[in-house]
Length: 352
Image 1 (cartoon, rainbow, N blue to C red):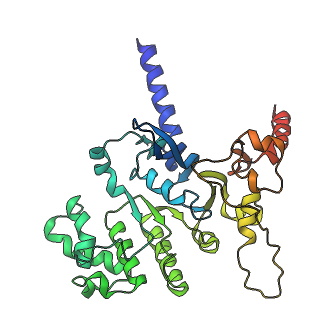
Image 2 (cartoon, helix red, strand yellow):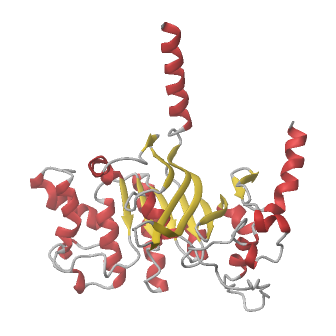
Image 3 (tube, rainbow, N blue to C red):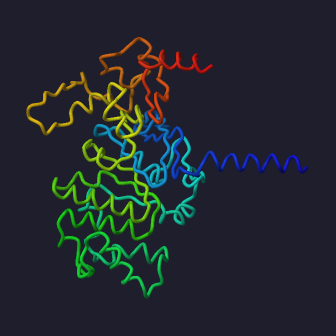
């Protein structure tokens, strides 16, 4: 009996070590499908494969940038992680806890720790509420501070986000896009979250304002020890704020690694094509632009094997039928591409 108890305790410790610890978020084979077409009997015949088998880990206090073309599943992945969408398959661990099958009431208790900043600061703020009410609503709901201290608390949060105290009784329509995004950030930060999903938070703003918002996010991260998942299609912004970068294509993550490795030593052909499209400020430098052939396939009918094979110049026969595994090519640098299969086998032979 004592031996069985020891085994259970050992398994529990092992589970806690494998999920949690230095990682605030762990995602294993995440999938999200949306029904597209139903039969006369109501059975779903066609699904949109919005997110397909995505896995990664996020360290505490770090920023993971997610990049890719429009429609590649970046936003859907972020919302599925927060369980704003139901998870079709896979596992999500937050602080070592499996939240995959959490009910709405369980998630409601967890909501203050998991926040989101939406892309459009114009549509994500209620026009009928003042700034103070917008920021203070969830603070009151989750009882972050006593009711009689809410105004003082909200004003402090506003000031930390670059908002004047006298904005408290003003309405969103009185502010510019950059100020509205600051209100959105203040609303998220007010709940003392541990993780914030930033869903293209600067794409709707002027370039000069983008820099201010990015610097604000970095300052808040340092002050509060926040972790971010930063979703963007702007590679220069991602490079500035992220510790690690994940590259998505048609719902799948094709490469992930430290920011400097992704930008200096990209491995996947799609990553190389993305980086070749980044403008260079020096007019004298020549850009070796990689033009991808064809169009993005439909997520309702994705290609077999490697999803990128229909547009890849390095396509081999195996790419058309076999989906590549996500393998580690360097410390923390992962890639899903058959070009590196043989090299991986050689490495495993040497280690074996």
